[in-house]
Image (cartoon, rainbow, N blue to C red; front, side):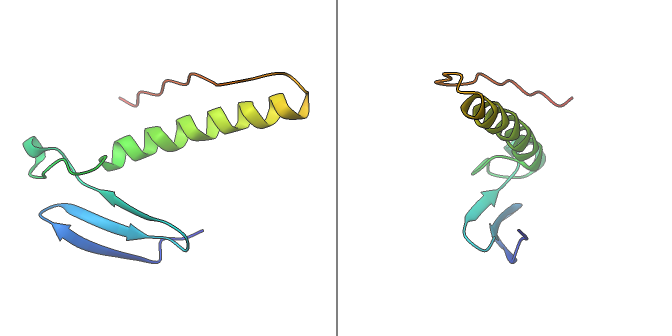
Length: 77
């Protein structure tokens, strides 16, 4: 999967288009943005948390272990 296009929508906010999804990224007001969407660092944390939770869910399903949810906390400093 690749980013197909990006478009500036406001100050530092950008809209990104992949083959199947559209997402927006911005930064908080202290950095000159409007905080309209997660910032790139938050997206990195989201991606790591999603990979972890989905991997746990797939493993549990393969091993027939009941798993209703996975609490994952990621903080990049």
